[in-house]
Image (tube, rainbow, N blue to C red):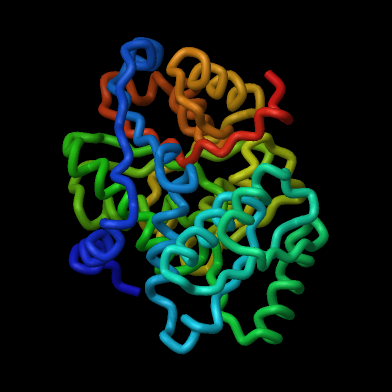
Length: 313
């Protein structure tokens, strides 16, 4: 698809009344620590606690009309399941969610607020996809992928559109990378509306498939998903990867220890409730602060759905 200023503006207008224009914050402590001017775009204040409500809402509003009575389906262990179930409920469209059987109870209960159509599967991608395909076929539903979907990417672009509208002099925007939907949306917003800003990806070293993909020129996978940043355990897709190749200047890697240290700063110094996936971007900036001295930096806090019961500093 050819992403244009018009198509991105239309999406923003289309979902604007449903979403929250999330706040931005600056902190002297962070500016001094990093040696640059840092803007936090806080999607933890979005409906359902993450940027994914933007994506889910835009995707559900654009499904073919014949599926509006039948419903939609996705597979997700957390934020997209919550977002799609709420967005579907908002528009009175049936929603079906396939979730791994090891999904934390607080995430399941969030989805159950909006739909009873929850199906549990074994905790691996193959099982998710097989169960989704079976239910999709049996019930004749419409499948919405959490990240590798054009309408999802367009919905995600609205986060950065808001940020660069308020802060037009940004030199860089840091985005976390999991399935690639957020950074692809960030990229097309920057590509269409900013002449000087560059997109930087941030990724855990333990799941560095996007970093390796950018080097090899093909989509890589991870042998394990062993990272505290549970929202970033997925792989890139065929739709978002070419966008990332075109626009993303660099992907920076951080260790588990660096993620936890940054999360500790955000929770205890900044008093913001964010999930570990959000802390990855701050960790990347702190680790590489000499490269960004005196620059204007936007950090996307992708969500705030944190599992405090399993968090250990």
